[in-house]
Length: 185
Image (tube, rainbow, N blue to C red):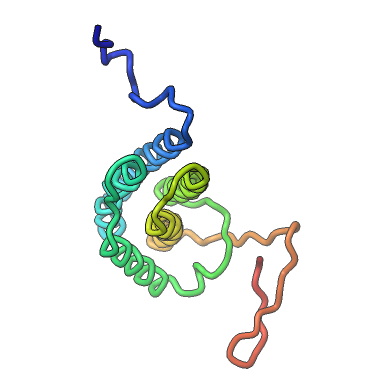
């Protein structure tokens, strides 16, 4: 007898493979991106980019169990978004900042965190089965794009970032173009 689908929220829930945890994690990421979409309607650039990115989070989701659905072109476009945002933001994204600011920015920080959790879940999957490198590249770059989007949203609303300086990790000196500059690790 066929099980009544109203009692099944996800057909693979009882599997022990890490694939399930990855798929649940990326579902959460996709949902949070939807929340960010609802909060960024007034910032057309971010809203448009999130509208493109949201289905790709679901494509990332299915690319482990099913057919690989993240393409080199998707990765290239995402990389271009990163370059575009960082080009506009400059030094604002060269430091670690506290996840704060407008509601939209804080939700984008939550999305960033969900993307990082997805990368970790993908690593667990890779211990059990082969995972395409493009999925790791895409998921990690997605986290970084969501970070720069959060900073962009705060800047658009005139909200200053609050740098975070760790008491746990020493500050290292980096050599750059003939001079030394400090950077947080």
